[in-house]
Structures are given as C-alpha cells and as structure tokens.
Amino acid sequence: MTATPVLSLNNIHKAFGGVVAIKDFSLELFPGEIVALVGDNGAGKSTLIAIVSGLHRPNSGEILLDGETVSLSDASSARSRGIEVVYQDLALADEQPVFMNMFLGRELTRKPLGLLDKSRMRRETQTMLDQLDVHIPSAGSKIRDLSGGQRQGVAIARATHWASKLILLDEPTAALGVAETAKVEEIVAALKERNLAILIVSHSLDQVFRLSDRICVLRRGVQIGVRSTPETDKNEIVSMITGVHA
Ligand SMILES: Nc1ncnc2c1ncn2[C@@H]1O[C@H](COP(=O)(O)OP(=O)(O)OP(=O)(O)O)[C@@H](O)[C@H]1O
Ligand SMILES: [Mg+2]
Image (tube, rainbow, N blue to C red; front, side):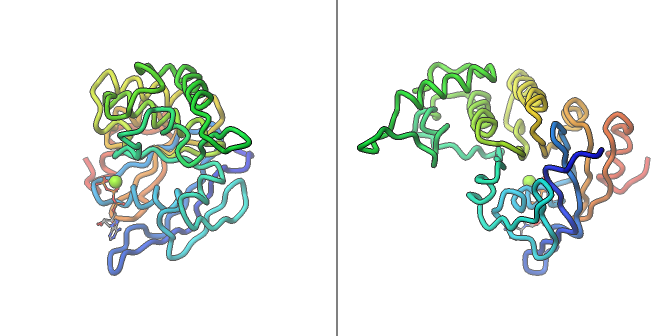
C-alpha cells in the first residue's frame, strides 16, 4: 500500500513497575482497514488501546498520525485528533438521556445565553442513530433504560460521529447476545466505507475472521506477528496466541 498510514506505532514499550505490558510493538493502520488485535488475557491488548487513546503514555517508542509524530498526553488530546474509543465497560452516563451522552463534553449551546440546545442535540442524535440503523425508544431515553445492545449501539454511534481518523474498539460485543452482536458487527463493517481505520480487540476468533482485514497477535506483551486475514486460518492464529503448535 502506498497511502500514508492513519496510525503508525513504532517500537512502543510500556511497563507498569516491573511488569512489561507491551514490548517493542510496531503496527501501521490504513484508512478503510479493520485490524483485529488478539491475544490471551493479560497479553497487553487493552494497554495498547489505552496508549493510542491517550490514557497511558508509552515508556518509549513513537506514535504517528497521518505521518506526523504526536504526543497523546490525555484522552482529550487523542479525541481532538480524530480518535474515538468504544470500551467494553461502556463509558456512558447512565442517568442522562441518549442525546446528552452523544454530545458529552461537546454540548451544543444557544447564543447569546449559552443555554444547552437540547432540541438540536436531540434531533442530531436521532439522525446519527438512524444513519447507523440503531433502534432505541427515543433520543430522550435514559441510558439505564436501554438494553446492552442498544447501549453499545449508542456508544458506537457516538464514536463514529466524532472520529475522523481512527476508532478503537475494546471487546465491543463481549457482553452482548447473538442478535446484538450481529448488529454491532454490521455497524463496524459499515464503518470501513467511511474510510476510517479501525482497531478492534476481540476474544471471538469467529468475529475476528468475519470482520478484519488483518490480525495482529500479542502474547505476554510480545507481538508475535501480523497476518492478512484471508491468508491465515484459525489454527494458525490459535497457535500464535498460545505458542503451542498443533
Ligand atoms: N494500570 C496498570 N497497572 C499495573 N499493571 C497493569 C495495568 N494495566 C495493565 N497491567 C498489566 O499489564 C498486562 C497487560 O494487561 P492488559 O489489560 O493490557 O491485557 P489484555 O490483553 O487487555 O487482557 P484481557 O484480555 O484480559 O482484557 C497485565 O499483566 C496487567 O496486569
Ligand atoms: Mg483487555
């Protein structure tokens, strides 16, 4: 590929005290590409997501966005650069309506008094949800009254709306049922067409094979390899994850 990568990670290293969570990790992500990050519990997947989303600083190594070296000092610096994250444990405000969650930290206000423009946020939220075919009772429903799948739909719609470059998904369907998982997968697959780059962590190899273009395997912080999804199979990925050759 000749395009400039949306994201380049070069020789990233991260330790927590004596525990090395990520060792010398390098990866490039291109626009319109879905890369799956897989590995056993504790392999370092969430740590890597936290580094790219600005929550953790690497001890060494380089992060480039669109070819430019950046320092992601916190979550808002990553967000302002077009990076959005969807966590498994849904960072949504339970007691707030859906439209306030959509605009959390980016609320629309009305001039000249600066009052919240609730009707506009509500309308725009409905449009965002409709675009992704996410069905909820109303944009004014409270998050706590939604099902797990609906919440995840809201979280992904929010990320999609604000992300201009990159979406990071850390086990987005771990808590969902079969139908809800299928829905979320459909939404993620559709994001490719918006030319966003997507990095998804998943323990479901079926899901990884359904969604991804490439698969990156981590084992105890070590990057074991990256494979093109059509050119590998589950057996190879399982042996890369476990280190046991069948
Ligand atoms: N804030 C932290 N402080 C200390 N150690 C941490 C911290 N976060 C992660 N670790 C350690 O780093 C290693 C990688 O953890 P990480 O959460 O990245 O794994 P993971 O691949 O996401 O696992 P899982 O599949 O269980 O979610 C683990 O050994 C973990 O104990
Ligand atoms: Mg994790």
